[in-house]
Image (tube, rainbow, N blue to C red; front, side, top):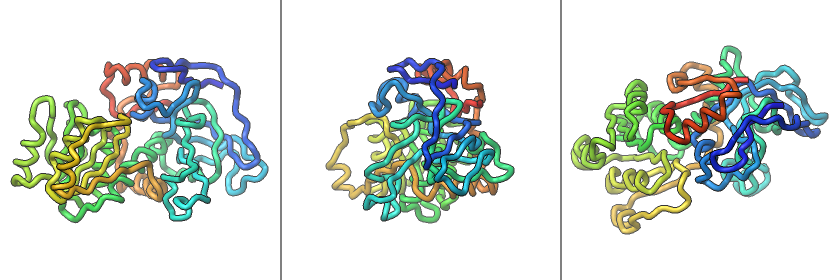
Amino acid sequence: MKALVFEGPMTMPLRDVPEPSPQEDELLVNVKSVGICGSDVHGYIGKTGRRKPPMIMGHEFSGVVAETGAAVTGYAPGDEVIVSPLQACGQCPNCRAGLVNICTNRHVLGVDMPGAFAEQLVVKPSMVYPKPAGMTWRQGAMVEPLSVGLHAVEITPIRLMDTVVIVGVGTIGLMTLLGAQLKGAGQIIVTDMSEHRLEMARRLGADLCINVAQTDPVAAIREATGGLGADVSFEAVGYAPTVQQAHAVTRTGGNVTWIGNSAQMIELNMQDVVTRELTVRGTYGFNTEFPRAIQAIASGKIDVMPLLEKVAPLEEGPALVDGLAKAELDLIKVILEL
């Protein structure tokens, strides 16, 4: 079968690889649509260290069941599905507490397991959800990033009409914006260096969009909030300057949630966190938000399709990932179709 194989930093050609075969407790899925995530791009560059070559990336996808193992029940060839990339053990203390996203034995498709930048892959039944009638393959591939944004919003105490700042409005930042709207946020302010992304945020309903290449975001947000700062801020990039910005724009006693996961180590003013009593939390993946994201998209409660800016065949994947990595392409969401 055809697959994009990550062979080392800045190298991910289209290769012929052996077709996977499901074990008795697995399903074989034919991929229909798969999104290129920012984390895939970071992995391609070699920044995160979590994706070890050679491997097949890709974790945002929908497809059709091609074959089921002998022990699999509830699914049959031909079933249209959306797949969560998270494989949890179900037995560790975190799983038993419902915190499957921080399972101590977790594995993730496209990170430490073969992913969906391929014609086929094998998955466990616990990772599979039926695709609602009427939902497109492309919408199905958008469920995973929406789930990440919804989880970040879910675990963050946003009160009705709170001022929310989102630092970085790539796909995940924009999904967080949609989730904050749904949770009842008041003024939503976003910051980024890309005017293209800021314009998308405006289209989705952001109240104030700040280009940090042109405007001091701290001063602008202080002015917009009567000198107080935001009640809640989300950092959706993952580097020291953007984390520092998220902290600086948050009011004393406010909440900061880190979504970005790019740099392994950053420098932070601990005294600022302590003396202003900031509550800082990390957020990883999602729990029950995945099926709820399916419902939100299928019902029309959340429209994710404005974020989709490019659809291409798998064969164009190497050039698209490379263009995104080199910042030659300023595209928010790219989906590969098979």
